[in-house]
Structures are given as structure tokens and as C-alpha cells.
Length: 187
Image (cartoon, rainbow, N blue to C red; front, top):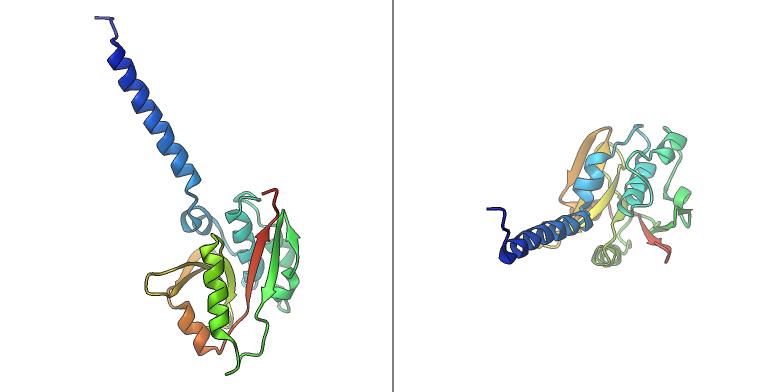
């Protein structure tokens, strides 16, 4: 009765090994929406830019989920822009302002979309300002859909805003600016 056969040991080892590998794969499959957006808040009405930067830092795993230092410093700063973070290195992540151009019929929209597409294919996200009725809230472009549209997320306090028509909004606005980032080689 107490006798354990070799085949029982092999079966138990296989099940434990399979379960462990599945858990490791799940842990490494870091989903931006589930892991970052759902656990983040924009804590001031005008702190959209630092809020988006914090989401990127959380996505890059260089700060923890309770990190709100940038928003707490920014508060409701009304004269801030992407320029405040241009070429700024935070915890090994450097941010870059791009497409700070007049929003008119000469705006290089195709180049903007190609840049966003390139960043997404590289496994990165892109910070973007989108013109809506309430002004220019800041979003993070999360992914490209099969039909070629970009999906973008933002936070308003604890509420998640999802736009599935990012390109349409950018075209209607005659362009916008974005922020990209790079991680230092040590990360």
C-alpha cells in the first residue's frame, strides 16, 4: 500500500514541472492593461502627462505600482507639456518628445502613424495627446488592431478611458505630438 511506483513518481514530477512552467510563463507574460492600467490612477485633474509617464515606468518594471511621485510633484500644473519630460531619464528610461509641429494640413500624419507602429512592434507603448471635447487628455497607445487602428488608454481618477479610434481622432485634429522612450541597456 505504501509502495510508490516509479511511474507514479514520474507522473507527479511531470505534473509539478508542467504547473511550475505554466506559472513562470504567466508571470513573464506582462499585460499592459491588466498589470498597469487597472492598477493605476490619475490623481489630479491636470496630471495626465506625468500619469502616462508613470504608467510607462510601471510597464518597464522600474517602479512599483504605488509610484505616484511625478504626479504628486506636478499636481495641477496647467502650463506643462511633453517638453517637461523630453530627453529626461527616469530610472533608466529616457523619454523623447516627437512631432511637436503645427497641427495643420502639412502635418506628417503618415509619419506619425508609422512611428507609433514601429514602437508598438518593438514591444513599447507610446504616449499621445488626443483632442476631444474636454481638451487634450493624455493617453498611452497600447496596441494596433487587425484592421490597423490604434487602441489607447488613459485614466481619469480611477476610471479607465479607452479609445479604439485613435487614428480618426488624430486625423480630425490635423496631427498631435507623442512621446517615445528607450530603456538603458542595463534594463
